[in-house]
Length: 113
Length: 109
Image 1: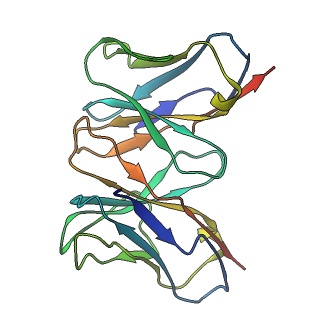
Image 2: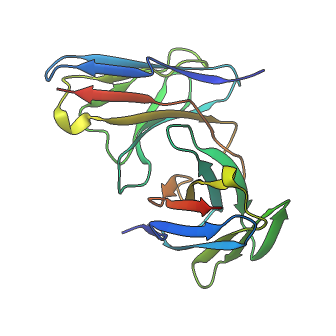
Image 3: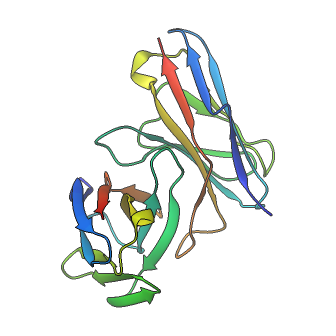
């Protein structure tokens, strides 16, 4: 069965360190997204990609970067982790836009100390 | 700015019916989605509305009024497993999903 997986599921890191969160999907979807979810907020879009070599900034992209070298993977990098980046991160993919559901990974809980 | 409003928390009784409302103000409209999210898990798709009216899918129904910027999710014959957060999201004119903060639904026996 097709799926979307994130790793690690939990991570604790120190302020200032570079951190990379992995996202891998076997749906063969062109669209991939990274969101963060914090209490009291809806999912907020960090970065997204509509295909290989395509990346775009979302609503809360400062301090984050992504790269898309193949269809399956969209790793999210925190350049220099800050306490404000403590959150739950979700990766998602979708086949197209209108009317198509997004499939989400299980999430990565990141704590920056 | 763009805004999605939904109640923070609701409580209902097992076997009953509950309606979760969502109002929105967005730059354009290309459909409204409802997702279910159990605690500690990923959101999963429930429904999609792009035209006015009611879409029924088993125990769950979703209604849309574009002129009022309003939707609701109706859950019938509530079961304990329906205890979860319900997320409303609108696709704007740029095909970006704008998400509400979610409604935590508590089901009591």
